[in-house]
Length: 311
Image (tube, helix red, strand yellow):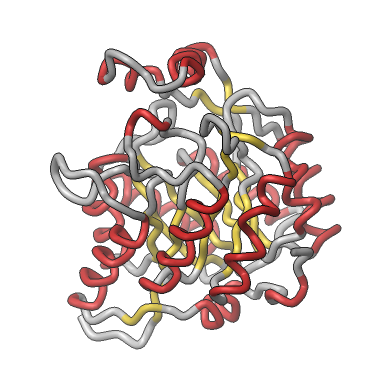
C-alpha cells in the first residue's frame, strides 16, 4: 500500500501505570528517563510523551523540579517534540497535574477528554510481592478511583495551558463519548484544528481492545471531525502492536512505549522504549509507510516550536 503520507511515532517512556516490580527495564530515575527517551527518539519517535517518577522509589510525581532534571538533557540531545502529561497519576489534583506543564510550557501536552473509572487493580493478582509497598496500594486504590476530567477541568486546562502557554494537545479519548466531548469543545471554538486525537484501547473502564472498536472509533471520529483531525492509536499490554498496526493501515499514527506495554513479544519484556519504537518502525516501513521526523510532526500538528518552551 504505497503512500506518500508520513506516520508519527509517539513514545510514552514511563507513565504512571506500571510499577517498579513489573519490569527492571521501566525507567524511574531522571537519568533513566532521559537516556531511554533519547534512545527512543534516535530509533524513530518524533514525539516523547513524558511523566515523572520519584527518584527514591519510582512512584509517580507531579513535581516540576523532577521534570526539570530530565527535560534539558533530552532537548539537548535530540529534536523530538516533548509532550508533558496533564493526566499525572492516580490521586493527583488538577492543580498538581498542571504544575509541571505550566512551568515548562511545552509544545504539546496530553489532555484526557472525560472522567472515567481507571482500573489497575487486576494486576495485583500477578505479583506475590512488591519491591515497594506503595505499589500495592497504588493498584488497589484504583478499585475505588475516578479519574477526574470534568468539563470545567478541561475548560480550565484549555485556557491556562492552551491559550496561556501556546501548548497544543494530544486529546486522549478512552471511549466513544470522549470523541463527542471533544466535538463539543470544537463547536464552542475552545479547541482549534488540526486536532491530534489519540484513541486508547484496553484500559479497564474505557473501550475494549477489539478490532471492531478501532474501526468504530475511526468511523465516529471521521463523522465528527472530517478533515480537521489527525488520528493516532495506542493500546494497552499485549494489544499494543496488533492494534497500532491495524490503526496505521487505516491511516493513523501510532504510540508505543513502556507506559502502555512492558512487552516486546509474547512473554518477553521489552528491554527499552527504543526496542518498542524499533519494532513498530520496522512494521510500518514494511507496509511502505514513511516515518515522520520531529519537524514534520511539528508542521502536521501546527506546534509552536522547541524554541518557545521554558526548559
